[in-house]
Amino acid sequence: MIYRREEYRGKRVTIMGLGLHGGGLSSAIFFLKSGAIVTITDLKKRDDLAPSLEKLNRYIDKGNLRLVLGRHREEDFKDTEMVIKNPGVPADSPFLRIAKARGIPIETDISVFLKHSRNPLIAVTGSKGKSTTAAAIHHGLKTTYKNAKLGGNITVSPLTFLDELREGDPIVLEVSSWQLADLRGNPYFKPKIAIVTNILPDHQNKYHSMEEYVRDKMIIVSNQNSEDYTILNFRDRYRDAFVYKTSSNIYFFSSTPVEDSDFRGGYLNGDRALLVDRGSITELFQDTMLKGRHNRLNLLASSVALSLFDIRAQLISRAMATFPGLEHRMEMFLDFNGIKFYNDSAATIPEATVEAVKSLSPPLFLITGGTDKKLDFSPFKEIADKPERIFLLAGSATTKIERILKEEDVPYHGPYPDLEGLVERLFRKLRRGIKVLFSPGCASFELFDNEFHRGRVFKELVQEKTR
Image (cartoon, rainbow, N blue to C red):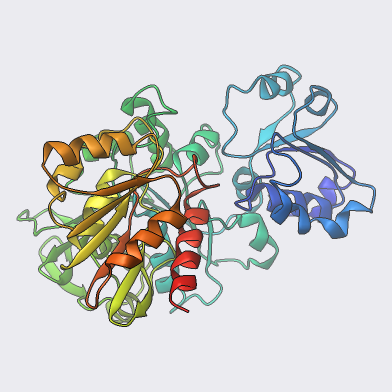
């Protein structure tokens, strides 16, 4: 479809969920610039949405923007021509049912983008590692495609760069299970390359079962055909379920060598990342800036994708060696008097914290704990005795962690009711050579807006103490 802003001029659009991550805001700005009549409705109140509302100030007096905050109203879902749904809004919302009953289309920022873009798409999902993998692919694509774009769940709406796209510019989209669920049945969502980093228990407070969660993840391959590629984690227990779901060309990435003459993809052999295609072996990279074997595996998945996009091995190696990583993901943000501080606030499941702990050598202080998502915390047993000290942040999941630490006879500090008190106590115990790892392994919503807010608060508190 040819993209023309005029098609939205005068169109009544309801945006359900302004939020703070950028999707709702970007949708609002896109439609306002296109001349649509926009109603933004959100259950949060004005003060809670202040950062997003500030960016809408220039549009408020122009007559085509209405704000309905702190509530939803039925009329905003009846007297409209399109509803734009935030991924955080449950699909069974009674207000969405009102719109569906009247035949009003329900879209998302990604579905609107895909309707207008025919650029080659690389889509990345998974329980953990998808942001790092997507960003590393984008970093590698930039070696050859200067106008390559990155968006999606990584908090950049693709609507923000729709106007900048040229024919052939590759797009990398990180997609969560919620975003994929919203794309079910969408004919425009057809990744040239689809990557699934891993499938681990997550969001079980929102899903009825792991099977339901996996079904949403599988949407990433549902429209692919024999001209497309799917890249899967060779050691993942759900690998074959995705293989059976797609008719695309299957490639793998593996944490260890694979002795199979038909293997296509990449594997790690020590620190070396190797690309293998039916016996032909090419070295992809060895040196990286990122800590942890789990991150090396993310870079391997990225490298396989880049090779399928015809990026030369030499350029892939250089890109992986220079990729700096992302904020809140094993981010070493301060080295103060020989004490290194790592912000891994994006670790929202216990398996992520386990990998983070394993990636750092002692002496190590671990800060962990937070909100429960109905997950199993038994993986903590693997690393419970590795940190020299463990500091617990209070939350509904922390009681599960406490139980494991007591069973393993591991002492701990806390739980502390807030991060300020925890950091204050932490600094009394620090000495030169310590590595401090903030890796909660839990969600954040009891004390923070989200994991990014949590990570920023931690960094600010540490930086205040070291000034």
